[in-house]
Length: 560
Image (cartoon, rainbow, N blue to C red; front, side, top):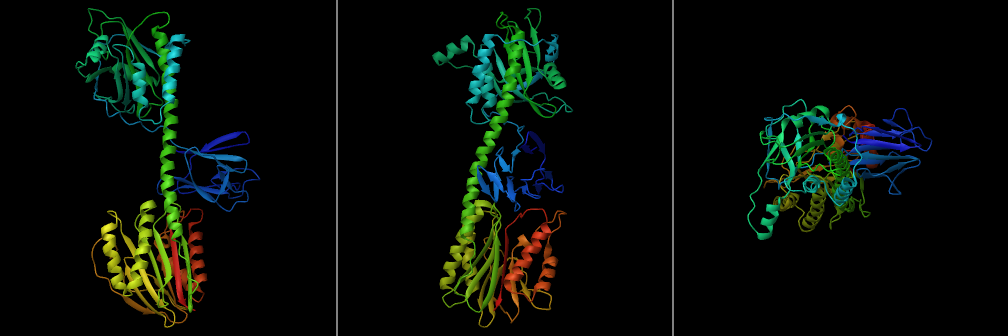
């Protein structure tokens, strides 16, 4: 579970942020209230984008929001990255209890045994705390140094096992246990395992002789049950007896041995435990009690290291992803439509507002050689960098094709054939392409699967233009038809994307076509720019405290 951490003026507290929208400010109506005069009434909003990133957005505050010392309007926040609001610092603390994946090199299987078990299980609560000897302190420092050199969470458990099973006939493993309410499986999952080499193994390695692989590991069901029930480390120590088969140790025992099992964090649900089966060396510097305290100290260090590595890994992965989306944003920003200055006799306005993660909207306006403006509104059914790459190619393809062919059905056929070859699988494009002659009001257009535009007329209900068309681009060869319509004096054509009609309210309602038609009825006799402003304002008011989740494009044109 990710948490929003707020620190300032000697206080620190955490709240669980709402992925749809969390408003931060001084007002009691805010989701997170910060009572400070340098914080605006509604200062900022935090929400998750479709890729799971947390976005912080300034809501027009007086003092702004700062990341890395720079004031930002909106930005994706890295895990743990400080966001400064007034005299307070906010950060998103990611869930650091993610499970580490199993080491694929492990070929050992574990089998739980309960037979022949008569030794006493000693829990941490039953033992007096021991001060570690210099021998174990040095070993602990070595392990801490080794773990600090890791750059990812994957090698953590394998390296831990190698560090601990460094003596002959010692074995260290990390097991994943199910929730307490579930039965213990006969073969628990082994995430990592290492057997200490015997002198014979070392000699065989020196000569290049074959060493049979160890394929089985016996673990004590009683020991695992004790750890699950107490949530703390336990130990079993025994002295080998020739009269008793010690079947509950991991390896065949011919000397005194100890089993120590310690949880690696919270195991009340699915959790990992360190399982160590080692020969006893009962010297003043290396008693079983010393070994037990040493393993408990190691397990605490592993939990800390795991959280740090997971956080570091999350930041690294996010940084790469953010860089990719930054490239996509730059591409889409360059594609933002601009109304040509040489147009005459036309009343035209456009609102094009992409989201930070590039939702796939496309809009373009340019003049042909015969003076007619060409305009296009579309949508790539993808997000991020793949969508931006398609948008960039689509712009070049459309402009180039229209430079030598003005028959729109042929233009669309040519574009479609290219997209079929070039688009990634399961990606398609909807497109409304039009040519407008302002002197006559004639519009030629082709609609490839895009939402039907609306004809806005004074004192009349807006009507859809043409018939619905399900033939999207980039999927299959199809025949497109060029259609025509005359824009009369006072009429306007409104072309839009589903960022308008699918905008959501806090009640999970969609803005919908009915609301759009209602807005257009009340603004039908206005200019193109006022109509566009009315639509976009109505959508923003409908969202209320929710952020914009999708690209929004609205284009309106008519005779001036």
